Length: 468
Image 1 (cartoon, rainbow, N blue to C red):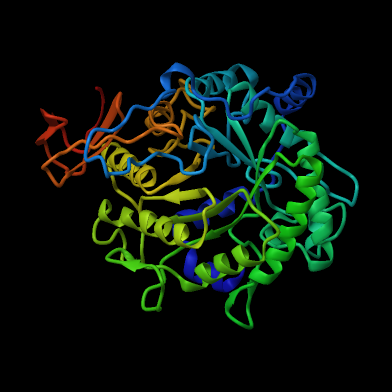
Image 2: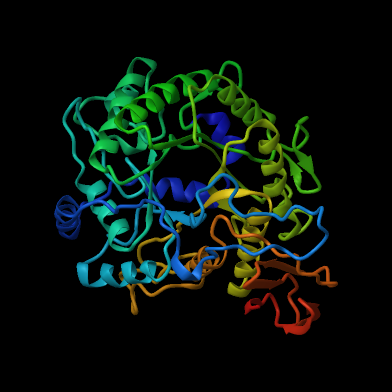
């Protein structure tokens, strides 16, 4: 990634994440077995089937003034689309022996959510080491795991083989070339690779083009090279639609981040968004050949930390969604979203409360898909991990962060009408449908309040699910 981008955008935790995924990934025997499984198995008949009777198949009218228009979750997404999900990273459900990975897959299968995988890096090897010479083994392994665990599959078309970015054919230099964009003369070659991936995984209906404008920065102008990205995107879009017109394509997957002191169209008590990212979005919208959804990513953290506090900072997500809705009617996807400081001493309860509050913010402001970035590592545990690590005791068991994603997907899929549930306490946040509600205490102390006509007492940072 360009020096300007690294200097101003990457906080410590995401820098660590980048270094980890740039390491060479070894394809295990289990991965080869999984590749055979996916080759022999047929694609699902419906790529975005509803969650069944746990979702809201027939939303009820919301009580209130006749003139009030109810908020429907997941603007632009198909009815029943889970909205909530995550992106696989280097260490994931196919990173261990079959008897262990099966446990993690079972944890994922407990509730259907979106599962996103990149074609190179983030757990997969170089898919085309030399022109026309393909290696899909690692990608096959990951896609087979997604399929076995019942995930709604999404593919992110990033990153590019070395020979497309100026490296040597047959080699993969993860340290030097991984975050580089294709040379302009190879835009069509990258589009061909994208089409090849779409043909290999015909059951995948959603493709995101590139990741955070990696390599697309104009050092001379000190701004994003949105002209170059959009040119490449258009080649990819056209190639994918030729494979199957029903494929859904989205971009530009650019980071909307804090830029203190700069004039911006989007600002608030939480900070000010970098106008250069907004300019890139506007150019892409005007010059793209087409798109089925728009993709951004970002963090609620600002240069001042979690400002004014970690819960009020979440208003940044709603503010960005509001700005995007003024620019386009495309469904809004957040490919990555972060809500915790890079160096955090939060308790598990506090982290889960902020996660739930962030998801409430996304739901109320019209997000069609929100992909949690999986922080799974090797030989370490973390509060934000989705399942217990595959090399530790009780491997593959679901952790609270995953349970939270699955509970939101089950209770608030696309098409759910939100109900108005009054609460007089400013520290309590609520998201409710006609059948279900989630209540979040944003205080680090016990709080008593009236919620939905009943008195409830919530523990410090408690997240409580209630049937109505």
